[in-house]
Length: 59
Image 1 (cartoon, helix red, strand yellow):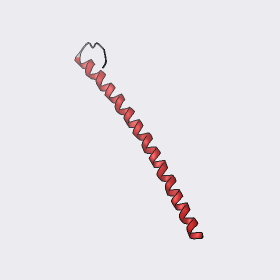
Image 2 (cartoon, rainbow, N blue to C red):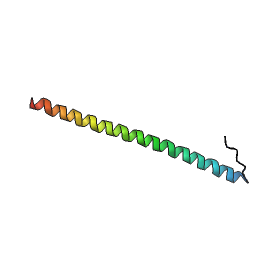
Image 3 (tube, rainbow, N blue to C red):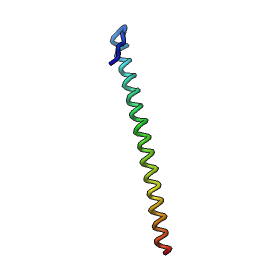
Image 4 (cartoon, one colour):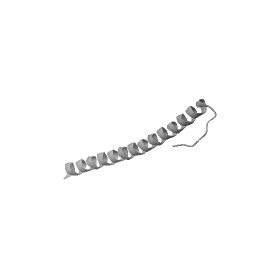
């Protein structure tokens, strides 16, 4: 995967820990974008339901 030469096993461990952290942060950011999208869709749908309910009451 990575062709790096490390001076010690400690450096190698640190390198892979940082790569793992980068990957997990990428996944977290992706999930946060999806949650924001779903939350916005829920809010819009709730406002549409509320609006439609108000229209039925006035008719």
